[in-house]
Length: 365
Image (cartoon, rainbow, N blue to C red; front, side, top):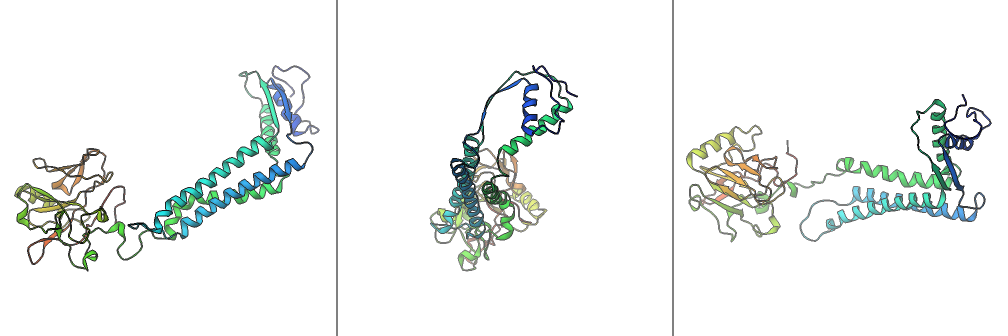
């Protein structure tokens, strides 16, 4: 079939084996009323010095991209990545990942841009658009056009570019999967008491002895210090317990009325995970003040409704039902601190929080 679509001139049989790929491309353009105004190489002759120089520069950018991305992978895997307080080597972990991956992507972008601007032929075409359906020949022409474009990229006849692309793109592909497998290579929560799983109330912070609940000034608290229906913000009674060194430890100690305390204890003991069972002391209950949504202080206690409100995004937690979220964006309950008293009658943490404190963290099984 040799029908054409609105173009002047004699029809051409695109199935003629004597036609080159570029001849088929030009015939396809002609049938779509496309006129090639300019189509010329940017270099004089094949494999000229200017072309080789451009190829070397583009290859260098691809290799540079691969080098930076490979550095990202190496740092991601071997860096001693763990959360530490104070100014430590871990402070540079995230910046190094960002810089190496960013430079890798930047070099890749410049390589692609330079290829398009400096290596591909200059082309200027004009087309009159029409909506005729595509025939089998036009689909053949489209396929050959795509193959011709691939040929014009010059990868097959430029081995340096082929190798540079392979070396540059391979690390980038690995970088995509790095976050998925990185945690399988190194455990981010190393040690006997990982910092993300422990607060200032953990016995290890006090010589393996129970930690007292104290006021901000460090004074210990007895049950009689909190009136019925009242509440108090408490901190771990250890050095710097009320400072940002233990910013995950502020806790709300609440003295519930008898009826509310009975309901709270019943729900705590019936906790399906068993984590809150036996955590209350008498009519007293203690919950973390760190909102599980965004880490704001959930400190507005409504005595009449037994709700704890977070002022940042209006999350509300029901105290009598294991501090389950009942309103707002929070989806995870506030951790309960197990309470008891020591031989002197002061409140102590029977153990650390059994749920992980803070926002955006998975539940432990």
